[in-house]
Length: 157
Image (cartoon, helix red, strand yellow):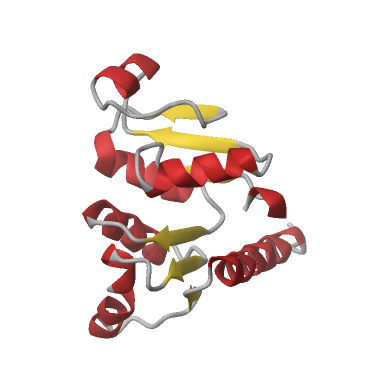
């Protein structure tokens, strides 16, 4: 993502968010971490979360569920890879907010169940793309986000 000129925003935790931040830094990118903690000290001591790959950290003090709302709302688009219940919470926020959503299929966890859940919910798939190839998924979601931004930039207010 960083090599494509995208600022990478993560939930500032372990697992996939940490891997995304590491990858962004390796690619020369800028990272933003939205932490559930209220301070750096709480982030590291209470939550035992990493900090080395984040350029700018926002400490919400809202725990994981509150952090999820701020995290998703601070992005132009989101990509879901693997995940558990917190990922499902983030997905529903992104879906309700009509964010461009990318889902990396065959990555395990909740991400592999989202297509089925969307079928059960009968709410459609507008603004959602699925792909099992990370590079293709990144290209699709960046294109969607830039189209959204282009519609805003083209507006006259």
